[in-house]
Length: 272
Image (cartoon, rainbow, N blue to C red; front, top):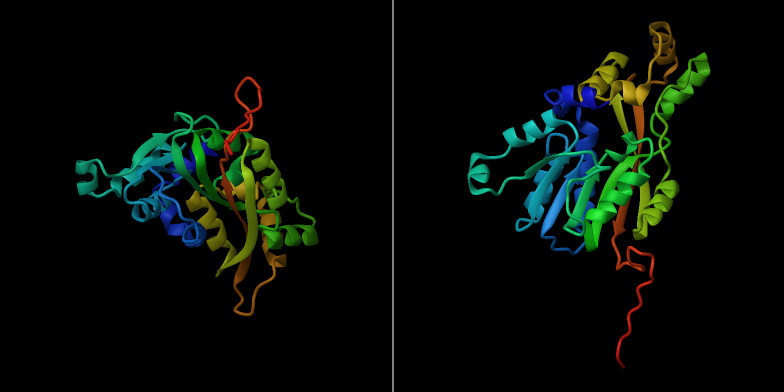
């Protein structure tokens, strides 16, 4: 998937309707959180909408744009103003995998991630790494895809007897358990449905290709199965193709450690 995503850097924004909408909803949720982080990071930043939002919101914080696809980071650089580059106020670009971040532990006040975690076969190592780099009291705010994503695709595949090749996603309860296992304290999880509509199946498939996720999201079907599957896909009243995405939102804080690295418990005594 890395090569597909890297190749999509120039076309990503033309199809990133869902990412922009989810990013706007994530930003609105930050309105309810009173924090003043010194360093913020967008992990899986793509072309940089998220880190630009964080930079605008937390003007005194050092912004880090992190992505495993180097061409995406080049787009972030291109969209950084000349003044920001000259004054050193633009995002710092970090080409890295979320499962192995080249960052010092306990240094970030806020980590943001918009529709990245769903591409990991096992998110737990990534969650542990995010927990490691967050400072105590730091916030992890993310959105990812849930199991009811592409329900129309799965239903149509079942009707025509085609394989269910679409990627499977974790539900919010499993993600909440993983956050706790990674060391986060009292994660808050919720979900919502967003439905996009397309004029034709070709437009839907083209969007996923422009995002660099077509094969990772939908898997492989023979062309005859694609035709049968889309014939069985229900249209809405405007004869457009509806595609549902379940969006799982999560907020999780890094609490004071309950034990130190050698396993001994941490106890605090407060004088009366």
